View 1 (cartoon, helix red, strand yellow):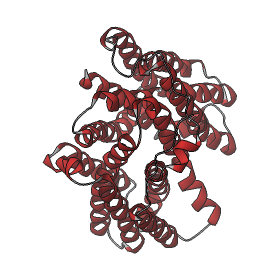
View 2 (cartoon, rainbow, N blue to C red):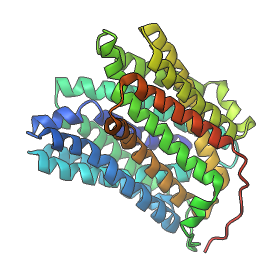
View 3 (tube, one colour):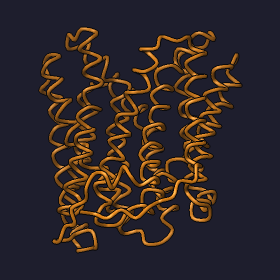
Length: 379
């Protein structure tokens, strides 16, 4: 059962990562201006944020079973819609719907996984993180190769078939009633999520993790180019980070997540990511860049499962779906915020990486602040 959920998580993130190398060029091929090209890339994250929040609310009301099936099937159908895009505006419509319905899947999947993982929730989070990491490694390479050899819509068709198959199988495989499928729903005020210090730290961690990812995706290729290296080095560096993160997820190192409090491993993870950004700001050759991305991979590998464990520990079955909805909404916002913020500040490359590193290190200290968690009544 868990393996099937892991497969859903893998293809959900595979869907996301296959978009990264091809969407801007696909939009340009349909005649999009530079503004519409940027909008086509960003509108997915915007609608995905709404999808995440909606998924969280519906998951707490109906349970993750129905939301997963609806999300998988509608995402599969929408992915086929890329074949119908004939200009920039039709592409924007498909992108908006795609982001919205795809946003239903991940919060429901992680809620299902969390509610069925009664023991070793840290290790379970690490394994799910491994599938995210593998998707991050395979997705961009697959879409880049297939788009150049066949077409961009073909890339999305492959993912669509996987989504439709998973949605059909989920109807039968996840049908067994579990604690997450409930009739009596306890309504929870949104203030509950934003007044609990550990939940706030989990949300903030999700935001800053993807803020950092946005900076890496936006500026690392530029750094590589300025140092005089081929653009392929940027892809190799990103693969290095992904491989190291997956090793943290799947090797015996993952036992750390059930032995050490997630607040400490979260702080260590985000701190290492901050140090990595500082190293990149000072890097003068590819050896230093590889070291930086290895440090970044270890940090990412520690942070992602820790944030999931922190959220699981701070919530109950009745509130977990909505919590995961907000959690992944902050993921979506963070991706865009990193590149937009630095673009707006118009800093030098060195200053951009240094500023990001300092922000991450400050958040690591914030994570360790001994705020007292209070029990807030749900209304």
